[in-house]
Image (cartoon, rainbow, N blue to C red; front, side):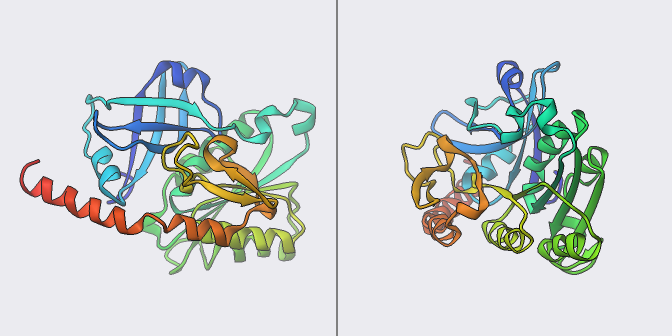
Length: 279
């Protein structure tokens, strides 16, 4: 448990680990009758045949996943799914001399880690801004710090690092500290990615965002991850999850994200009742 509600698990899935790349996700089904849950891959080890997932306890299905103990098995794990991060297709010459800035919010730090690690392993300069409400909710600090050039912590209450929003830190780095970046990547809550994109636009900095939080079934068939990108309807799970931030209709995406809140609350309450009765 990284925090009281955020759990990190290593899952033994050798074929998945062998094929995984940064930016991709997998689908976990805890039990035979369980819901399909898309989770971004937060690390993978081809030698040990494991992939790492980070789950935040929000509703019934995430609570079920977190309840598993070491040695138990999920009904199934499918992946890797989604289109890998753009930079995985770049040549060494294309990557040479580039400087990236990653903006991670909350649990979004977990999927940022494998991307930063991949770039670091290839000698690419990477700075990372990690934001959380308070220091107790910061995750992956040591891991990210080990694979980036500079880590900037931001907390809403000032309990660790810079007191303020990740967007304020980004603006400070560029306008006050004179930092220059070729590409930004923002992953976290939808509202954070929206304002990170607006800040990047102001700074004339290209930005990629991940719409993984919109996904439900992970195949495009449910339509829950449908979003307007550059005026066209796109499906985050099969055409993403990463897109050019400038092109995303964030207001529409946030409305879509709230579509299933009532059902999720009901499912969570039913799950608690079953636990209370000993399932």
